[in-house]
Length: 109
Length: 113
Image 1 (tube, rainbow over the protein chains, first blue to last red):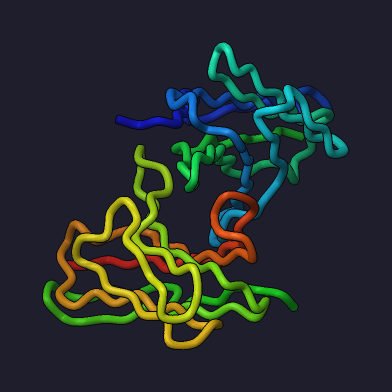
Image 2 (image 1 turned 60 degrees about the vertical axis):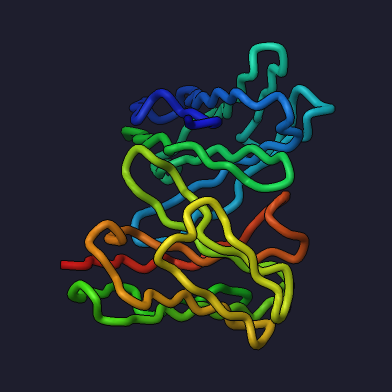
């Protein structure tokens, strides 16, 4: 039973447009959420996080939104750039990290 | 440069032949962990260590061993590898446990035939 799900295995967007990556979770005890980015042949790198006491956190082009009632997390990238093409993992914490499957984002020039 | 290193990066081996994947970090982090990544299953934690000589099982520890004799090193040991351990393995470290940001190594692609 996967507690953290990224239902879209892949997403393709045009350069300059918005990318929206989604993540759903089932455990209401999760209180901290993170997004990691992974390039081929490299390990995941931390991108942005949000505490459950907030509903939005912004860092440059990246914004994470948290909807606790819907148990839904999303990552917005605006504007998208070709260098953003990577696999994005969401992770949720309730004493330990639980990761989603990842979504492969392709940003076309 | 602050980093987590893993060796080897790629390994093809046969069933039953013991192997060790090394992991080292130069950030003086207390917390280290091992994950495996499989299609459709995300990153699953194998073992973790809160500090030297302190290790504990993650979600999928069967078939693996670890040790933490020094703060910087956290090797993953497969005493008798089997084909279902074919996977992509990541080592990670953190100053504060896995509740917050972790730093990942580049990964080890293991194939067991």
